[in-house]
Image (tube, rainbow, N blue to C red; front, side, top):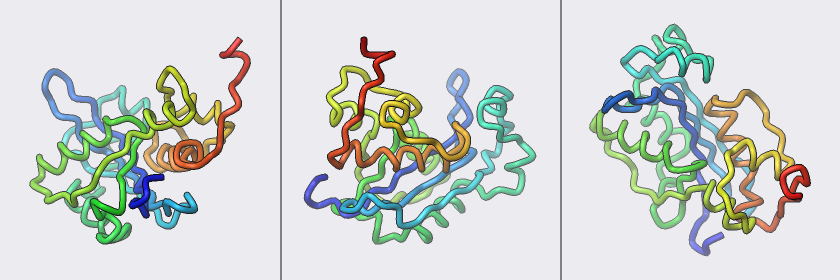
Length: 191
């Protein structure tokens, strides 16, 4: 753990996939505030988001999120305001906290949504947990969230490709990234 970091904000997003130049739009968002010393979750926030466009059928199949589910959901600016209120603006300190996600895609979808909606984002630094997991565990490859959890023997609660379930799983892997826990490699993959 870097000396100055006091909080991790683990995020996960589900989003529409941009086709030929169209922007990816958030349809679900989750954030978990984690104490950097204890690596325990302190607060959670999760919401569906109305993307303002139809959700592609393949995204509906992958996530289970349908157009009817997001019709009354907040738009991105309202969801972002609620995020800041629940997690706490002070926890988005560029010197004391890090926004974390499994890979970098969610970071860029969040950045693009803020730009599209003229949302003044709270400045933070980002940690790519997928890369940090591989580095901390001295792996040659970067694992998917599912594979990392399997190797770490961490059980998922909830469905894959749902923001809160994925954020909780990523947060459960923090001891393997910033703590001293090591994975026991599965011999089926390491013969």
